[in-house]
Length: 415
Ligand code: DSN
Image 1: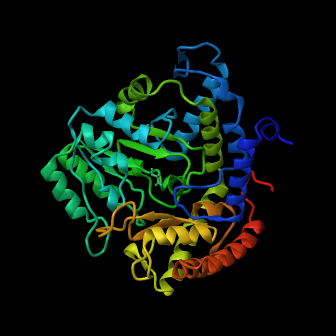
Image 2: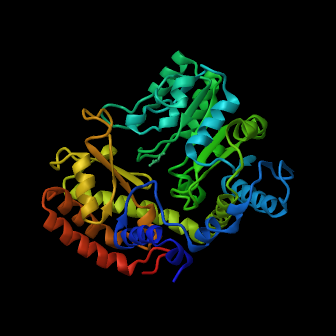
Image 3: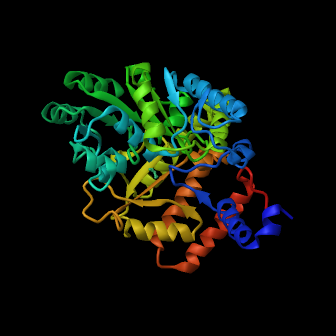
């Protein structure tokens, strides 16, 4: 019996139910993943007992000799992984990381440019209700109405009109590669800081499958660490040396207090894993799986935004399939396949009840699924959404999904 089971059966029961959900279902939310047992061990370690405001060798508390070692190791590994001049590993998560960049490098009401949220951007890239949109003027850019791809001529036109201080490239629901080179050129033309938020694709960049914005002269790169990068739930900020001081000051003491040292330790472990040669194979397989899944769904009549994917995620407009994004999400949940409802570009429906779903392959690839499983997965998905009102059909699919799930265990879960 575990300590948790003995001491707090109520929490244990909930945790156990979640373990079953993860083990017997297939996780397709593209921003999620299954961490290794080593990462889990570090997150659950005694570093959670420690406070360490400040930075290595400049702390406001004693007892830092081992915290300093682990934070420095995380920094060194991240630098190597992304070819970064400076790395801050303390941000609690992606939104605070982006906020720290703005807080450190911009003045109140400076203009920022980011892709509009309902077209694939992020809340912190200038949504009116977020800090980014309240404290800054925002000049959003858009995807093309027909191709649903980012039109770099339009980005250039908007940048020249709005003269932003900072331009953000990097998205949460964009299935295509990003033209870092042209973004950098446009930022130079208008005197803006070029910032990349690579949260979704960090693992694909670290694994050598997609281009690194630093190779094109980007100034600042933020990323969460828990998506394709397969680390703990957290984030880092990377930048050119010239921006290091204001960004570090913005993280601490500007926005945050003590870093979460147990998570820093887990980030060091995850970066170490991503530096190994097998991570390249993992990253390549994520993309192969996403493309194979997209092809199978297209053959079944699904309308994929931009027609497919260059990365780990797919966005589908469910209108022609005959349900809404919410109905698709709920029916797939009942079938043991987890996706999230999502707006599609120029969606006539509302964000909480949109036309589309977003899904991807980072997590199922960690479990060992390959292209040969994608046809079956597409068949299950299609059957679920075309029978979204039929709970018996959905339960039947879930039984089949469970059998496959048992053959591909989730790291750290033994039932
Ligand atoms: N929640 C993240 C995602 O799902 O893409 C973005 O913050």
